[in-house]
Image: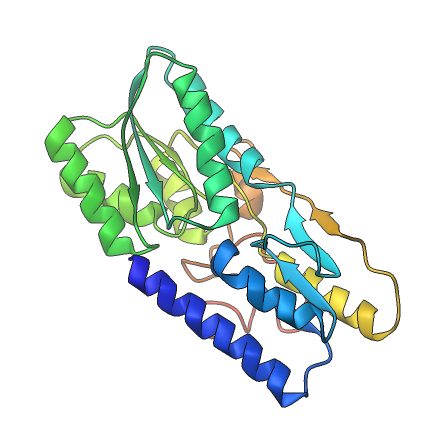
Length: 274
């Protein structure tokens, strides 16, 4: 998993350097794969043109703006508090994470880890990396079910593999525990169908749209909010779940795409179009 991430870092750094060398780039928009690895490349870019960073940050303030929701701490803490409140008598909690070294993911887990540690009746039986791979996530859950017999909650630092993790319980006929996820449609659909005890903190994908808006503003000579441009970060709960369910969208479609008012939505975005 570490080599896979390093390879992605190298590719992203090379792409940035190629763009700079081409002298055909007026504004650079980048969402870093890994914070530390991409910081030097972003700093080199800042010396030559305006840089917009979004979603994942870098360890420098040289970009014109860093576009982000209110943060990973809020995401991780909200999910962890939901788990704690849903398990008043305590229980076994399995944490599934994507990869180390990504700022927003590290902060999500640090917030959750602290909240779990403050509740003595919560037993974190494992914190495992899935590499955002559905098969790996499912196998991890299967392994922990065999080792511990029961999992009372699954806390996740992102939601792409939530549905796969749920399938691991379904395959052996085990009760689906408390789950945290995100705004992908496969998770929201499973949540609705099974009446799960669940929550979906979000990290809205409308950030990509905001980055484009920021680039247009820069090219027009307009001021851009900075050094950080904070965006809303809604939470999906049982009370508002129906508002975010989009039955005609693909399984991994994010409900908070920010695309609802775009031309061709939803007819060009749905199952048949894909």
